[in-house]
Image (cartoon, rainbow, N blue to C red; front, side):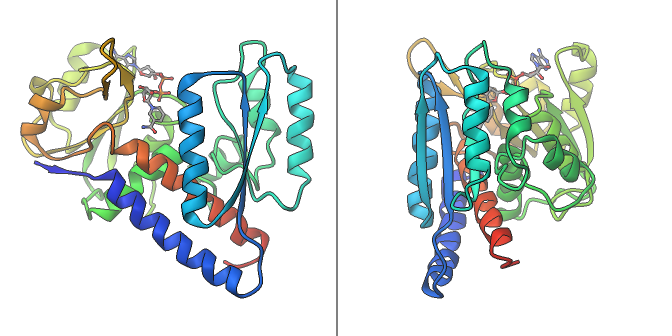
Length: 290
Ligand code: NAD
């Protein structure tokens, strides 16, 4: 079993980005700029935002964190987004999800200028990604592709099983792995909560690559996989004892895997790195550098 080390891969991507940024800045351009909006107080969001801001600094980007109280109304938040959309000094804009219950997250996502939508959640980017056109790709899914690419894991022609159909992970990674992308051309099964257990087991037991994003600790057990499987564990679950684990029973399943992502240090690291890749692309688009 070998580890798909998200930390190492993310470092490599961010170092490469920082070199490119240094060259752009050296030629007289301003730095790329990411703006992050955080509404209310939510401990996991605080930690995700912190890692985004830290990664911006390492990539050589400017960043701004705009905090708003839980009481902000949807229309006030939409007005703020409109203001940032119109600001040429911001290349990429993220509204950290979840937002408070009185705000409709889809209205927020739809309000972000698709050219600044580095999360890749706007219907325009999601549609372009689905059609195989140039797009900001949802960061976790894109990060998984980058990780597979970094470790030269064969994907073309393989049988992939994706478990979980969220708009941010399961759905986009199933599309990206099946599309004719540089990391793609796989035959993909997308399983979800309504997939009958027996069917799920049939699929996982013959899968070459499994991507699991369900949010249930220990969901993938060793009897569910074949020897040599490549396991991508997207789950981030905090146990009562404070330990962070994924969706895979790592201790037992890893013995059967050819490759597996650790949690932490796997997909989570790649999500942030992919956001940096998207931000650089937004900047390059702005300055016609591509
Ligand atoms: P979600 O929480 O919105 O939905 C869970 C998905 O799992 C649903 O599509 C559901 O159909 C499926 N599911 C639930 N029970 C199932 C079952 N018994 N059999 C088959 N499918 C089942 O999904 P999400 O937002 O993608 O989050 C999933 C996990 O990934 C969470 O732990 C989350 O914290 C984590 N996550 C990690 C990152 C990262 O950067 N590593 C990014 C996003 C989400």
